[in-house]
Image 1 (tube, rainbow, N blue to C red):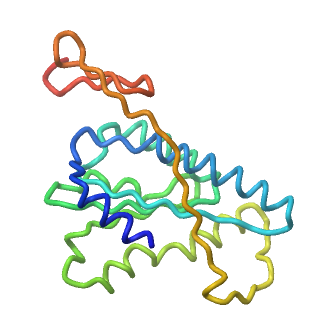
Image 2: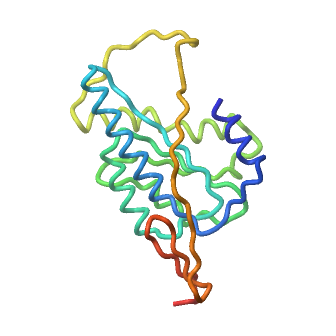
Length: 190
């Protein structure tokens, strides 16, 4: 289901462009994962989320992204970032380093696995079991007993949230204000 949604999105004429800012989506996902886990604890169950981010470039603000990664360490959430296209993604390797003893982010460069979907699948999903286990063990939470579930019982609920992505260009045409209050000043304009 999810793959079809991505395919449909890219067939819609989506154009990926700079700057690459993923901090807000990571913070929203972390907040939702923490609320979901709190609700689950009240029900005597456990919940853990996975966020998939597709990007065509390295992040624009490494410091802000690193701060968001610090917040993610406290959330029941794995983040998989897949770099697609011909950009130089060497600047994204810092996301794989982990923070404060935790590592719940995985960066995968699509082109390194473009010839093998099995290799891409393995690279994107291989760290999730360890990340999930580490999250709960760091908090002293033992796993609940295994639950037997039939495939038809698995439901992926659609979730849509409006995120304001309004972009205003400054009077000089160089400064760009983003809806969340951030300002992007192109290199060479400062």
